[in-house]
Image (cartoon, rainbow, N blue to C red; front, side, top):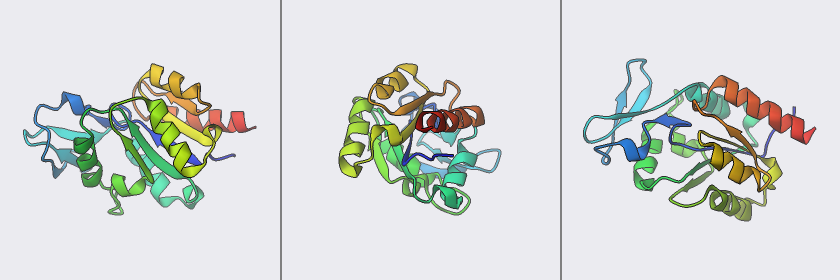
Length: 176
């Protein structure tokens, strides 16, 4: 099966909840554990930011399975609170101790267009848009990025196993 050269994820409502704008406390964040024992980032009012769907398992696979070793990881988020997102990425760690921040090669986390995020990654890396695979919970973001040639998968319930496999299958189909 053909693998992408870059895998990109939206953050809010794709990898984690709640969305940054929904937090009433915000920074500073501290590490915590949810009832399932997974790490969470806890804001100053005690609200927890944690991974949703199958994001934990998928990110763990990307970090540990050798078949993904040559694939770059990116976070692309249009948040108005990029510093909060950065803190959360530092605090959320996989079982190996690797932070989600350190898992990714690219952090395009700022207000603006997802197209801008992908253009900047393309300019820095030379990776063709057709070699990029992206998940987002907002359909208009996926449509906007697909217009560039990115294989963009709409994931309305976040990064679930179904959305993950749909993306991999669609990428393989297009690379035929």
